[in-house]
Image 1 (spheres, rainbow, N blue to C red):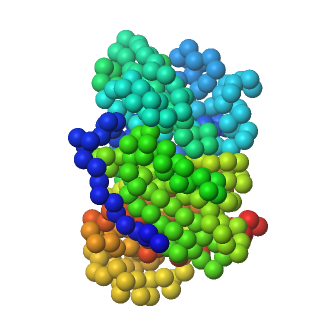
Image 2: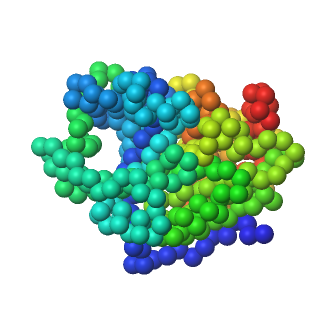
Image 3: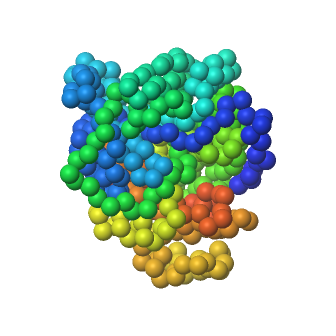
Amino acid sequence: METETIQKQKTVADDFLPMLGTDHLELYVGNAKQAAFFYMTAFGFQPLAYKGLETGSRDVVSYVIRQEKITLVLTTPLNSKHPINDHLRKHGDGVSAYAIWVEDATSAYEETTKRGGIAHLSPTKIEDENGHVITSGIKTYGDTVNIFVERKNYNGVFLPGYKKWEPAYRTTPVGLKFVDHCVGNVELGKMNDWVKYYEDVMGFFNLVTFDDKDISTEYSSLMSKVVSNGNGYIKFPINEPASGKKKSQIEEYIDFYEGAGVQHLALATEDIIHTVTELRKRGVEFLNVPQSYYDDILDRVGSIDEELKILRDLNILIDRDEEGYLLQIFTKPLEDRPTLFFEIIQRKGAKSFGKGNFKALFEAIEREQELRGNL
């Protein structure tokens, strides 16, 4: 059993696919205007850019919202014949693309496809009066794609074809800073295949491994491996179900998403107490762990800077590794289907993913599954 072992990180000099960070995440949604309003109101995202009929886009509309380094693109088709409808009909609202900011999108495409990457978008130049952007992309698990974005020669608001979006309605940010990691759920027996795909095709390495001894309850379990790029800017945990007495959360996800896909986005904050307090005020619902979780938590994690009573009142989880500790909490599903959700995380030195909280977290998820009749 290989548990939470941090593998030796590759040096940037060895990296044939240097990545500058997360560029954006595109979600296909049933109604982009309403989805934008939800994420702005509930999570404090700010309006950034728009593409639609008014900008000459006759087949899709997209609203772009941003908070610090987190950019979401919410896209809806404008007619019944558009292929995005197939994605929506099958999966419901969900993440269609994880876009990675790179120095050279052409090289990224060539290097990944020659190593076995499944081609999705050959290098494409798009331009307007503000310069040009080159995009390319490869497929990954399910109907999800990784897009490479080269924007060094562009000075516009987002991408060519978009105009600045300045609605009268705005909310205040809640302190979300950047995407810490993005978790994918894949079918039974497929986790190692996709880990190898990221290793071979994109030069990622296996950062952490969890097996069913680490992530299990009385009823269900799963296995997970975390892959990371060379500089650690991009981290993709990949989960698959493991055998258990009842249906695991991964199986529930795959049943309702109807295939593999992005399970959750972990969004970093520098003040989780402020962020979660604000989110709760705005109606965001979180998973709840029993108050008994906190009875001996400090015996396990040691001294922390925050007042335990406040963390208990907000139901924020705590875990520690050899580098420090982290604070985390998970929303309930953001859609009617029990699929995509958010994690809010604050790292106080910790590099791990909250292994000590897995049991309490998974029991909380199982309580929700039981209410849905899906356990």
